[in-house]
Amino acid sequence: MMESMSIADVHGRPLRNLRLSVTDRCNLRCQYCMPEADYLWLPREDLLQFEEIEQLVDHFLDLGVEKVRLTGGEPLLRRDLPDLVARLAPRTRIRDLAMTTNGVLLAGAAADLKRAGLHRVTVSLDTLRHDRFQQLARVAELERVRRGLDVAAEVFPGFKMDTVVIRGKNDDEMVDLLEFAGERGAELRFIEYMDVGGATHWSLSQVVPRAEMLARLSAHYGPITPIESDRSAPADRFRLPDGRVFGIVASTTAPFCEDCDRSRLTADGLWYLCLYAARGIDLRGPLRGGASPATLRELLTGVWHARTDRGAENRLATRERSPLIPIAALKRDPHLEMHTRGG
Ligand code: SAM
Ligand code: SF4
Ligand code: SF4
Figure 1 (cartoon, rainbow, N blue to C red):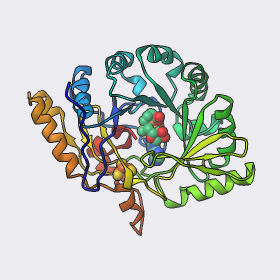
Figure 2: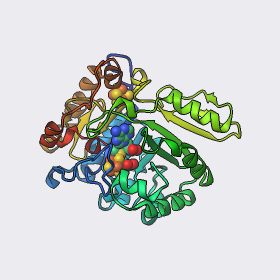
Figure 3: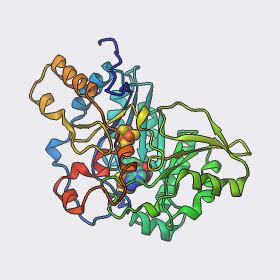
């Protein structure tokens, strides 16, 4: 094992964070992510095997990655996921090994994942109402998600919850969701609705900006205090008067591109330097083609050194904002989708 080094991109941003998508498939159809009825899936033979994921992760660790997050699609749909966790967990250079899930299959999987060495989970939940869940996620699975959250509270105490806030859809549930998270000892993060790949119905008028979220929460709870946090963390954290902490990810109105140290690997081995990047770098090809470790490391280093991406900032500067990618283009290339890139 070589010593980790730290590499920086054109804007001096290190590579610390890897979001590892293990499948592009999902058992929900959230309107803001997978609004279509049918999708073109990645060919199964293209999906990276666990050994291949391990090899690539080792290269990333050599270059300074210390946080790895399993995601998808829905990561719990990947067969034998605890096996992958058990393979990755012994790598001590992974300071933080986490997973983001929609929670549907979590109740049955949490204990195995914990045993395998997963450090943390984040569960996405946008509403506590059955009719809305059915409307937003288009599958009636709220009950199973709630069971998953109850199990997460026991197995992964202090877990996180993520809520995408959409005006007119669930913005009136912010307080209820905070209370629900608090009862389970979870830290809730509100996420501004983003105009990424699958968000083909996105409009700026549906985004509830961070400032408005704070104003609405203070109107209910009283004065809210910001907490100093790590600049590269996507969420700004805040404290309610009763001491409870929550976060806001203002990716649309106040993007954190300046300090962005993350990149994404799709389940078929394309490396994306930004959520908004038009293209990914093929790592599966060289890996399966027998590229030497030195060649792969050179490829990764060269690509990161040349990275200039500031996707969300560029979108913010766009005057006439509409959904990022037309549906016809999405249908031609699944890699443009948020559910393929892992969010
Ligand atoms: N299926 C898992 C889940 O939902 O937690 C993991 C993958 S999902 C793509 C990762 C995260 O991206 C979720 O928290 C989801 O809410 C978020 N996301 C998807 N589309 C989004 C959008 N248009 N704006 C903001 N967040 C979005
Ligand atoms: Fe599936 Fe997650 Fe996308 Fe919802 S946000 S459709 S759960 S991948
Ligand atoms: Fe990083 Fe791109 Fe997101 Fe900006 S838009 S924070 S550069 S992933």
